[in-house]
Length: 418
Image (cartoon, rainbow, N blue to C red; front, side, top):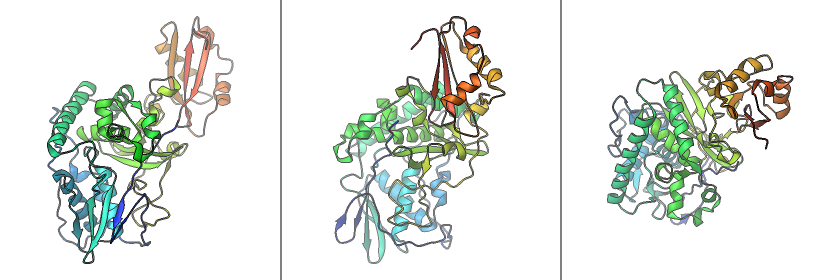
C-alpha cells in the first residue's frame, strides 16, 4: 500500500532565500532540559478552544507532548509560533540566545502538538538579526486553505461543532479509555478514504482543495485524506476526551505518519491509515491498533533524528520525533479481544470467533500470531485437518488475508467461491 508522508519544505533567510527540504546545521550536543531561565513565559493558546462536551475533560494544552520535551528557549519560540498563528501574522520574531536548531526543534514541536491549527502550512522562514535567530511563517506557504481571519474563525466554529457531534455519537464518558480510543479509530476508518491521487501529486501541483487532505479539514469535511490527515484527526479527537496523543514520523514503503497514544498507564502505537483497508476489499481492521515496539517494527521504521543532534545528513522538517517513551502491548487489539492464536489455540479461538459472526452465508474475523511474522503457509498449517467446511454448513471457500502489521490476518469463510 503506497502511503505518502506529508511533503514539508522550509526556507532559510540570511541575506538571500534558500529553499527545499533540508537544513544545514552544525552537529552539536546540548542539554535539552536546560532550565537556566527561572520563568519561562507560557503562551497557552486561547484560540481554538475545545467545544464543551458533557462528561469529558479535554487534555490541557500545557500537557501537550512535544512542548514538554523542549528547553526554555525552545518553549519561548514555540509559544511565539502559537501567537503568530492565532494572529494570522507573517511578521518575524527574534530570540536572544537561540540557535538555528532551537528554531527548527521548536517549529517541529509546534506542528506536532497542534493538529487543530489547520491553516498553518508546512513552511517557515528562518532569519538572523543582530546575532539573534528569528522565525516567521513563509509568506507563500505559511497559511493555507483560508484567506483571512474571519474565514478561519468560521471554519473553526464548524470544526468544533463536527468534533462534538462525532464524540457524542461515538463514545460515552463511562467507557474505558481503550473503548473510547477503539470507537474513534473505527469511526475514522468507517468514514474516511485514503486519497491516493492527492498523495501522488508533486507539492507544487496540489490545489488548495487537495491541500486539505493534509489537515483535519479533509478528514472532517471531505471524508478523505492522506496519513497526516488520519493522524491529526485521531490526535484531535483524543485531545477532546482527555487522552494523550502525539504524532510520529517515519517510513514504510514511503514517508509516513502515525500516532503514539497513552492508554491508562501505557504508551502504544496506532496507525489508523494502515487500518483503513478498502484497497484490500475490507472495510477496516485493527492490525495497527495499539502496537508495541516489536509489532511496529514489522513494517514501520521511525526516523532516527532526535533533538540532541541535528545535521543535514540525518534531518529534514517533518522527519523528527520527540517521542521516546517505553511502549508496550498490554492494550494491543488482539490481546484485548482474545484473538491471539498459536498452533495449540487455533481451533479453540478461531472457530468460536468465526461462528459468533456466521450468518449462514459468510463470517469474517481478524486474528494475530505474536512472536514472528506469519505467512499463508503457517496459517494453513494451523488450519490443518480442521473440518472448517463441516463446521460452517454450506461454506465453499476460506479466504486468508495477511494484514499490514505483519503478524495479523483475516479469515473469511463464505458460501461464495472467488
